[in-house]
Image (cartoon, rainbow, N blue to C red; front, side, top):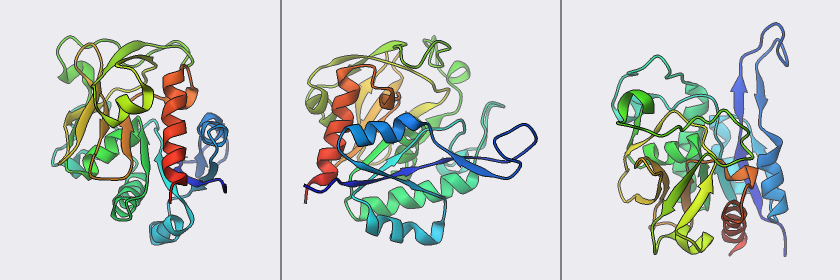
Length: 240
């Protein structure tokens, strides 16, 4: 069976002295593509060319919207920035928003990771908590400082959800590197996982072939739960 081609979105940084380049550059941690390849997919990186979104989707079998050190523009969910931690990358978000919207029109498998999970919710009309420590009562630590190869907290997974069927458990230990989270789920979006403090850690949309958002970073494969998520996504992308 031919490997399904998986499009992965990239992060972007401006250039400057002492950086990788003095000119703007794309980047993505190696473990994203490794997780895809190890699960049987063929990773393909997608630069931010809005006029080529349909061309990209013609060539891939599934899309992963990756995380990054930035935030979805609050104006996309009807708010203004409410905290100085909010930083945006408008051209990345515009590209990813169009990519997800058009992938959904094709009923193409989509996996959103961290910021990608949040973006999927915004595409469906949902909103975000702009800064957890400022906007959530008694939160646990969601920006771990120790290695991302280690867990930070647990999540409880809702029975009967797609995520539950994929991982085969209602409890998982996950890593955690985010200061925002989903506030109001978008239209038709189902919450499938929460942290002990109630923060939403996973979403899905049952109206599509495979539409899953994960707040943690399963590409680090710190458990069988993470591996099963990638295995299930690649299987969905390989299906006719």
